Image (cartoon, rainbow, N blue to C red; front, top):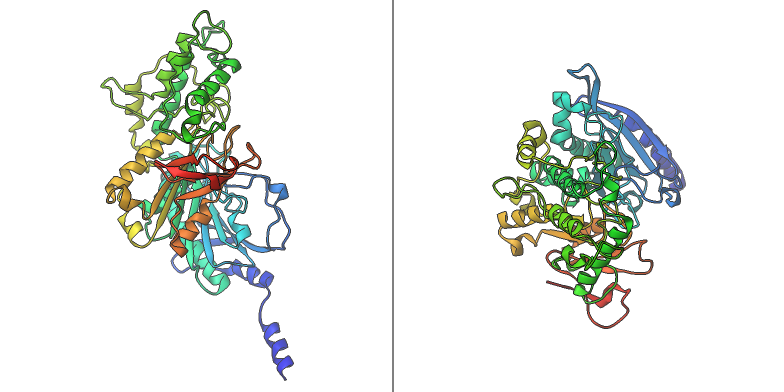
Length: 514
């Protein structure tokens, strides 16, 4: 009799694949929603090649069994005659840990990235940990990551700016609750660049949606960061040799030997400031002076011309307007400024992030600053709002991180926001009870670098802080640039400092100091 009842119960309980297929009929009252796919994938598959928020060595990653649900909110024809709608995808793992993660996008979005949750998750993405993960294209399809054509369509521009992420989050939570038969216990958001801006949106505009938010290198005011990139480029273009048409040969402003001289100079002046010479500059308060690298005689390898040193000093100080006001913070001098992803404004040999050349030798900062205040450009800014008391009072935890060698967005801008945000929320001591900032020396934009430790688990740190109350004074960082090495990545304004004894490759022999 007992065996018969067990068999009957088994027969009446749908399999995961059946439950997944049933999600095709999912509806939400009052929401125009089309579920376009609900497919089950057995354990052992690999994620697709990396995209925004995607995996690193994807071919080596084996995924758990999961149900993928794809859909579109408000499919429509836009004012420009093109099709629009907020597309999304949710991966629902078989072995669910009760948590939900929204994965931020990248660039101008325009595609539904694979819901994996790899950003700032160390070596184990969220999906492999058992998180349900959602991603979205934020309301438009793009030909590439920087296709801005959608910005001419009003609703599409609003969706990208802030509305889409706010609509996808609650809908995805309903899908999670429907599929598993209960809501998620805790909700998290993690993203970098555009995804970092979206994470800030969640704390600023939707303060009760998430328990923990991880914000990396936020694209919080690209209209001004572009001015900063161009300022560095113009400063170096002024000393670069010219081609037959009088245009600066960007690559020759600093030769490879000159770049090595700069990196060596930074190491000589600042490497030991954290207690040990190891190729990493954790003490970002150390001030590098390029004038100390000027040749004593004629220009030669191993030293800079006075013009090169002056151009570096001017460029990295950041642009100021005619009244002396700082328009965008300068970029930090760091070991990766020439070896990671390029000198600011000289990415890809003199191309800005959207592929246009920074070929000018003069720059009207006042005019550029005025243009940056255009309402359309201001639409995506998240740097002005600092009142986060609703987010913090419901127990929300907010973690920022930024690569010190990021050539697109200056780490100094994120530091500035963090300082303004903490001041607006009771001061640093009080704000650090729910928010922290981490700086990664040598790391480029969202990761990578010839001399950096760019693998760290801030997602796990957010989970422990939210669910266990364990404040992350530091997280352990590692990376392929230094096999076998680990360091604590300390909460700002502290930095990792060698204790003076013990294995210099082991994070436990370092401490966090002011």
